[in-house]
Image 1 (cartoon, rainbow, N blue to C red):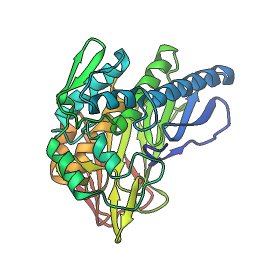
Image 2 (image 1 turned 180 degrees about the vertical axis):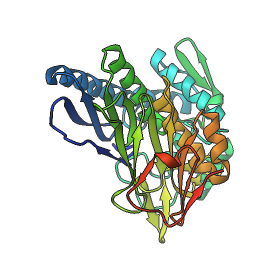
Image 3 (image 1 turned 120 degrees about the horizontal axis):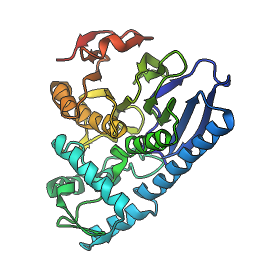
Image 4 (image 1 turned 90 degrees about the vertical axis):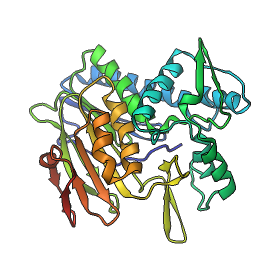
Length: 341
C-alpha cells in the first residue's frame, strides 16, 4: 500500500554515531524514519520500536481498501446502514470534520468513492480516466462528513455516497500519536518522518533538526529547512501518486467540487507551529491550499494557525510567505521567487 510517498529527505549528520539512534520501517505504505538523540541505544531502540508498532496498528485500522474497521464502516454506509465505530475511530471522524469545515470542504475525507473511481485505491495507478457519468454522479451527491450521525458507537449517513478515506491526514494524525508517546516516555529530542510528513521534538544536540524539501520535478531536494521544537512540516504535491494520459498529469489530489485532480500548483508546503495537533494540521492544511490555489493560500493557512507557506507553481516559480522565506536554505535556486501575499 502507498498512500503517500516521501517528499522530504531526512538530513542527519553523523548517522550511526552515539548519541544519535535511527530506526527505519515501512508503514502506511511508505518509509518511516525515527531518529532519537541523547538516549542509550537500547532505550532509544525500545521506544522507536514501540512507535513503529503503533503505526502498524493504525495503518491496519485506517486502510481504505484492504479489510479494516474503516472498510467495514464504509460497506455499511454504502448500504444505508449504521456501522460500528470505536472511540478512536469516532475521534478521528470528529477531528477530520473540524478540519473539513475550516477548509470549506476542500479537505474532504468523505470522497473515498471518487478516489477509488480514479484508481488511487491500489498499489498501482492505471493510466485511464474514470467514467465521466460516474464521476459527475459522485460530485452531484456532494458527500461530506456533515452527512454523518454518530450515536454512541454507531455511525450512520443520510448520504449513501459517503465513503471515508482519511489518507489526506492519516500520516499527520499518526505523527501526533507518535509524538505523544515519546513525550509521555520522556523522549524529548527526536525526529519522526512518516513518508515525508515530519515532526520535530527538541534538537539534535547543539543544532536543530533539518529536513530537505523535495523538488517536485527533480530527484533531489530543492531546499533545507530547520525545524523548531514541536513543529511539523507537510507537503501536498502532484509528483508522487499520479498517472499520465495523453501527456497530461492526473494526481490523487482531487478537487471535491469538480471530481477532477487540482492543477493550479506542483506542490504546497506548510510548517505547523507546535501544538498537540501539529502533525495533523501540517498534513491537512496543504489540501485546501493546493486545491484552492495561490490566491487563497494565505487565507486557508491562517484558518489553521499557519504562517509558514511555500508554493511551487506550474512553471516552477516559488511563492513563499514572509515568515517562511528566511528559513529556507536553497539547494536549487527557483527560476523565480515571489512573496506570497
